Length: 216
Image 1 (cartoon, rainbow, N blue to C red):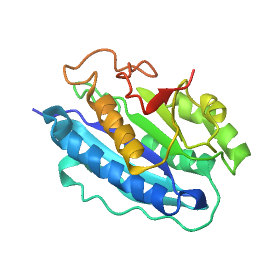
Image 2: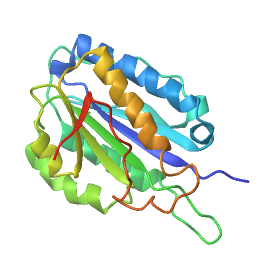
Image 3: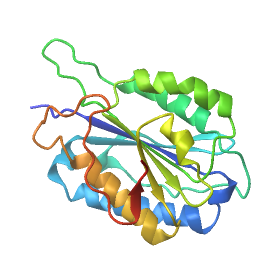
């Protein structure tokens, strides 16, 4: 029996303001997330993970890869650089349009993908960001979840993209680890029993821990 893939895309900010402790904390959080996912039988069988970062350039950290085949690289960021979130989202669109397997006859195709975005600032490429929003919304994501990290982030801009926005007050390893563990809980929730709730923008999120605040 072929197990349906659940594509999970992470789009992470590596602009200059993330240099140093913040990006080190992100790496710690990603390792915690991967460890948690690998303890879940469903996730081990179905989750495929892709990680893309954005600063003044868009970087592929990890192409869409089965969970049990992932060797997580260390994410680095430059000491300075822009926040090209719009271009990062364009890259994600291209990947989903290329990689997502639509249902075809007896082939159920992939589960609808999940997209997690994390940024500590606001887009440098504002026009590109605004133009890519309809393209993101047209794709068959089960959920798009954005995280506004730290005091300089702008949750209201992320609300233009998705109604599922959370915030982190601090950018230390504890906060990022907690966030990425919540990401892993979100990934595994809803699909373990093939629930029908996996429809576009209708994914119910598990309750976040105190460090992760839902933006109303």
